[in-house]
Image (cartoon, rainbow, N blue to C red):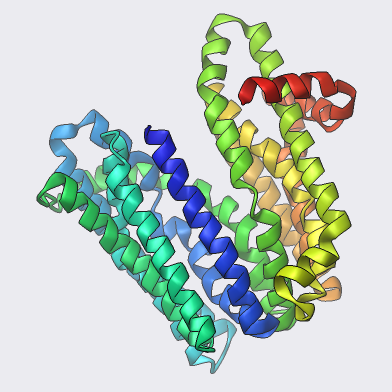
Length: 427
């Protein structure tokens, strides 16, 4: 039941965000959409500072020390508020340095990051997870997602300018935090949080490595937007951002699939290692098959998809989409690899492989973006995903078995029977 509520919230949030986000892109046009994407990219790149890696350990600490949950939540919220304010100042300075004289753009960047000071209240979601009672929290989050989707639709109908959508983005972040607090009060009846310095130090001691490990992942996500913005035009950023959003829209599916089969895999690993490896191979086959079918379909229909969803102004996005969609083949297998690394207690390799991919991504963007623009950024994304999720696995004997499975998965038509068998078993 807990999983169902969490999945429902994710589907509503991502679904509403995708549909309305595409409508917003069509309304703003490539240049203004490029500026909006640029502003929002800063808060993604600042994620390690915004969260301080605390998200991953709050629920665990509450489960281990339920008597201290007031101190844990108080320290977590306080630390994240400080992180948000530091992020706002830092990103404002960077944006002003990179865009001399453009104080409005720097203000927008600072505003979105500062909103996380209130959005930090959303850390209560981990209290709900620790107590296995996500219902009130997920309902609150879904209400906020749908409300701000309606607000954005209203702004489109009113022909609102770029600034209105920046304020909407900042407002949504803040209201998510307020809604989380309201759900907590409805469930827990009273706030018993308090700042406790030793608890805060303990959280940071346990989370700083997680914060560092988040950096390569966020580089993947948004560094291309910033590099495009400072070497090409805002319109090209808009074309690329729109194509990337469409390309990444289905990424939640392999993540959900991999998370769902993890308990079964761990159980099999302890009972029958041969069957464990067989099930892993079948899962990789299924993920590669699904991703390739999505990529091939999108490659054929890219022009029609862009024209229908975004209009003729985004015609250059079609070629970017055709290239970028193939990153999904490696990303989908990466979703299972992440679970395998956890099961095998090889988490450090996740940081290593992500770092390799991030460095290659930056290097290729520096080479390709000046001459090829968004098309070059898409190429860099595909290659860096392939390196981080596939190629880097062959650098160590301990991760090579996963790399071998991925090689076989890429030739899934030769094992179509196992693909169908896995699909039937997972339904």
